[in-house]
Image 1 (cartoon, rainbow, N blue to C red):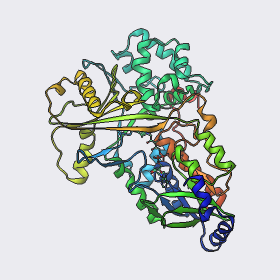
Image 2: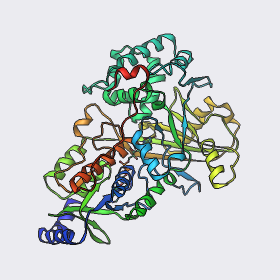
Image 3: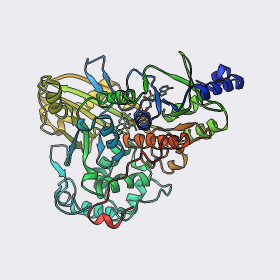
Image 4: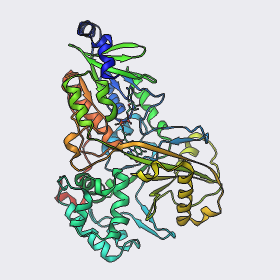
Length: 496
Ligand SMILES: Cc1cc2nc3c(=O)[nH]c(=O)nc-3n(C[C@H](O)[C@H](O)[C@H](O)COP(=O)(O)OP(=O)(O)OC[C@H]3O[C@@H](n4cnc5c(N)ncnc54)[C@H](O)[C@@H]3O)c2cc1C
């Protein structure tokens, strides 16, 4: 609801608001409204439902998962993810959330990453017997994609990241790489492929603290921290069980319920919906940065949030989905070097085992692959067919069989507002979960967690908001946030 509309709504009237407040106090106890069924809202809702709160989750779409969801694509008739989503072993809160809702067995874990050059030469990075942080050392030393000079430079830079995270000094990570004398090849084939996909931004616009976090927490800390988890089911299937988790604990999940405003009252909050206003004792607003301020009542608190949100800019991600008549590779996934397309996920192979074991559905021949381009500014304006042609041309450089294979169907999903850009200094503008309104809390990947915009960041923010609310409402003592993975090997000397 816009500020103007809110003022003209009965909720904007203080008399109505105070009537509403007394109703809240007399009729409803520990009722928590959660606005947004993305990862942040779901994590908060599940944690609070578990702690005994009566949770009502409002989601404007007909499915859960927010920016991590799937749907039946009208052009192809296939269920597609809005984009391939992956996680890492260091995503302890996301993994905790999967365990909670019974989805942990739908994630397939990989220890090996394959980097492919055009022409098909492969470098495989995987842990060996050496202790952290050298666990990937042997495969790294033998990787043909980098020269000895590139590798020595990378090793020196990683050594600098070992003791502690670099500070956000307002300068981009590209400058940190220059200061640490990285070769052009090391940047292009090592730092960029990992960081651009993890942070969804070009390195000359990326905060040094976040880039450091990605490498230190996933690559250096332990072998487990760097394992890559890939869902074996469409994203909405991964998160659908959160609804029954909430319902089994006395909560409700309202789909197609678009909230147009939240008004704090003396003893609670009033939630404005097109079907009528509803009351709750507390609310967590778990919507993206672009819509939060619009949902809050006009005034200083909303102005401050609006001013903070104005500093954030979205960065796009493009997924190119291709269905071939034959299998184009035996790899489940690969980093694609030196081209526009950055990652290949062989979804038919990744999903195969789970589908066979759990649904009995026959596996179809052929390959379904999704190619992902993060920070895909150059593709946003490009017509769909041109994107597909470019992707096919480039894919054939890595897998020549693509030239002979028949393309059965294809689609492009451009997520223009995929994540916020982690620009240098962005931490200053990320709001805390508590607000000026004692009964309204914030969650969402943009809220302060010191994590970039990821599923882990969203779940962390949900747990943090739930913790703050539980304290305020005396619902449950203690903490929902899960500890980070312990450092292993020599990294135990630097336990930051
Ligand atoms: C293309 C793409 C690829 C990505 N890849 C990865 C990846 O590989 N790994 C990773 O960890 N992360 C990835 N991310 C980031 C990750 O998806 C997000 O950081 C995370 O899902 C954000 O969760 P959230 O709950 O904060 O926000 P959202 O998912 O945006 O959830 C907000 C929810 O609120 C609902 N809502 C908004 N307004 C209202 C309203 N007024 N009333 C009711 N409901 C409302 C929305 O419909 C939405 O469901 C990717 C994101 C995108 C878009």
